[in-house]
Amino acid sequence: MSEETFDSPCELRGDTGFAYTLSLVSGKYKMIILYSLTGATPVVRFNELKRRLGKISFRTLSLTLKELESDGLIIRNEYPQIPPKVEYSLSARGQSLIPVLDMMCEWGTVHSNDPI
Amino acid sequence: MSEETFDSPCELRGDTGFAYTLSLVSGKYKMIILYSLTGATPVVRFNELKRRLGKISFRTLSLTLKELESDGLIIRNEYPQIPPKVEYSLSARGQSLIPVLDMMCEWGTVHSNDPI
DNA sequence: CAGTATCCCGTATGATACTG
DNA sequence: CAGTATCATACGGGATACTG
Image (cartoon, rainbow over the protein chains, first blue to last red):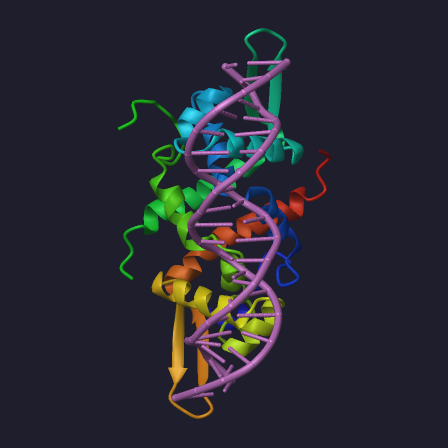
């Protein structure tokens, strides 16, 4: 099959869908945060999340979580108690993004030793 | 290292593959450039690429192409003639990344009208 | 045509201290 | 515990002019 026949399954070029996805996940930690909310412990508190992410600052984590929440990708669940307890988890919309992240992760694993 | 346990399909958390992929495609135009090298005209000259990308500056396009090339994702083919002619196209490695970008694009198309 | 060379700037992120 | 407030900074990227 020659290269000129390939047609993108997406309407890129005028890019809509692509740019939209990027707008939701671009940022130094967004994808990693989403990924951190999968796996064995998919409900995570603020400080635990911070620990998992390593070097992220309070400020950046806080701002990033707000963006993810307002984009409907994560759910913030606040327990009215003292000391405060807030749990973050993926929304259904956020979950739907995970296969995309998985694919990125797998590509990297497979190709990280490609000869260049 | 970390003693946490996870069942991500990828070895994220200590993130190798994921961070690797990100390091190759992050940047305002990298993914779009790769995408621009698919489709009906997969071999594109510098200025034509610039036209396709719209608002990118000479400087950024030039720097970005160099990075993509040194990461083995695109191929730069220079014709020794005057005026110069340089063609850019995807390498096999670059091509292998396209399905990942397709998936991002499709996700955006499907979910851009999600109720939030 | 295909870039460089400069200069400039905004925004994303970091560090630290403080609060309800 | 879960954040804000404040200040500082780095770097990606833009605009323009110039060159082989």
